[in-house]
Every structure is written in C-alpha cells, then in structure tokens.
Length: 59
Image (cartoon, rainbow, N blue to C red; front, side, top):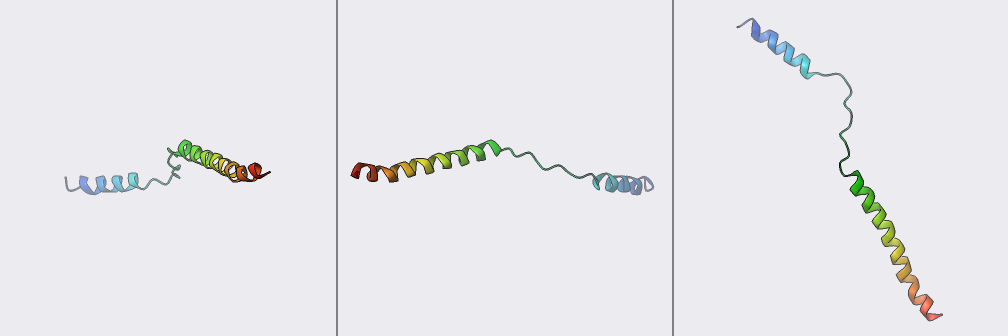
C-alpha cells in the first residue's frame, strides 16, 4: 500500500495537468445579447421619430 500511494499520486498529478488548449465555454446568452442590441437600435429609431414629430407638426 505504501508503494501504491506515490504511484497513484503521480498518476493523479499527470492527469490533472492536461496540456491541451481548452476551448472557451459556449456563450449561452449570445442570442439574448443580440436581441438586446437589436432592441436598442429600434429604440433609437423610435426616439428619433418622436424627436422629429414636433418639427413636422410645426410645418
């Protein structure tokens, strides 16, 4: 048993030190972020329309 522990320890350390590059985690809220950006663009268009309304009424 005393001889087995160092071998197990070395194997665990080697297994834990994986040298492969890790891929980034998936972006699970990417679609939500894109929808928010699109909504902000629509909000800007609506705000411009609201700002132009008094100018058109004055003409």
